[in-house]
Length: 211
Image 1: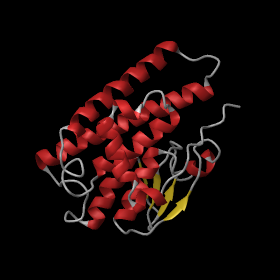
Image 2: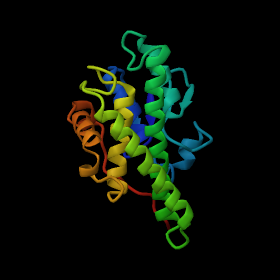
Image 3: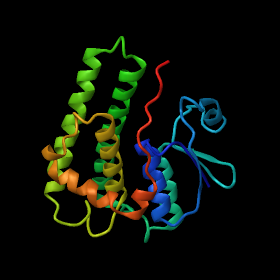
Image 4: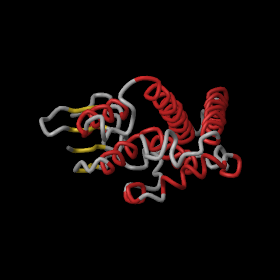
């Protein structure tokens, strides 16, 4: 398998970490959606990452869909999410909140870099409000959980998604994620980032160029 995308993307990173935790071998092509858009388009017309190329040539797109495939590949006993029922729905909701936060954090980066002279005040304030709102909900959720990870003793996709998005948000918008204001989330992120897979699969943020 070949994973396309840079690890400063929380979406690419969550897929790569899952691949590593599942002990699934893959080749990494750190292509940028801006600098390498034409290369990505050959496999994904949206020119977005992550894109995962399977050994048979099929290209999978969007991190949640890719992880769904990986879960099937390793089987329900190893999958980092419940197969069905309330446990799965709760995990998917946490993941949706995390990835939605990530989408807004990425949007703010694009607004700052690509529209730096014509930023929409309304759009920026809306994104900031959405980010803050999600952080408050996730902080409350995590503070109410005593287990090492979000849904028990073992790490799951929700844990990975939250940790990856928190790192991106802290690097891209430090004013929006003050660790002191979110102690439960900060502790969660630190626990995840201390794992070898997280340490190995990491890249400082490289914002797109606006010229």
